[in-house]
Image (cartoon, rainbow, N blue to C red; front, top):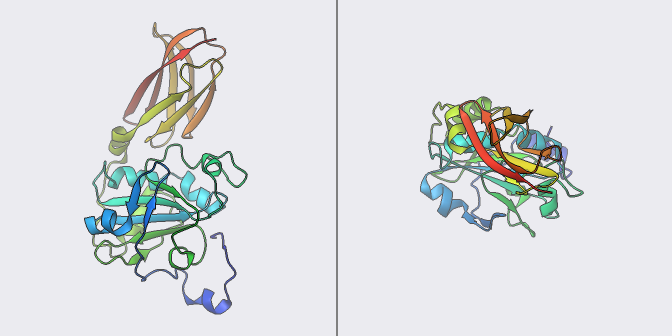
Length: 269
């Protein structure tokens, strides 16, 4: 069930399981954690894109289930700017007390890392500009699907945690846009990347994997082509002990499906 933030009377709760469905989404202009300004109407709806606004909180279990399924990331990759260019996904952290550390997974009010591997905008602001009564009336998570032609909220598929079921839920309502069948592996190949830091590293190296779908096979080779380390990652971030490696340069290769990305790392002491 959703994590309910407020106490609702039985009368209000009985009105609708999705109280915001059918309402017109109020306009807003927010700034994401990267400093980019986003206006709901000017930048998204008026351009003909379906808006998918995930209103969640870092401490919310059902919110984490949606995030950890990577469903919205896959939708962004398949139908966002680098895909079919039909959709814009935005994550709105809807608890004004959430800190950057909470988003990074190191704060006191968080379940995990909400940033690594996410390439769509994340908004964390205080005070909140968006109203819970309009955008998450029954609690977290609420995933607002907003029709571009008139700004009406037409769906809330908050519990659809696979790519296929989420797309089916969006296509089951009238958005004015049909999300066609895509090869997620092809979208994966377009967006996959790996970042290694710190680089050079002396003891522990963090591998940030983004844009991959499913498990990622990671292999580390010396410059003579000898494999010195390998593992499979089901996460977007892995912390690797490199103390057993000799001083020098190595190649990190990450593969998943049709994607293959390599990066060089140096080990120092």
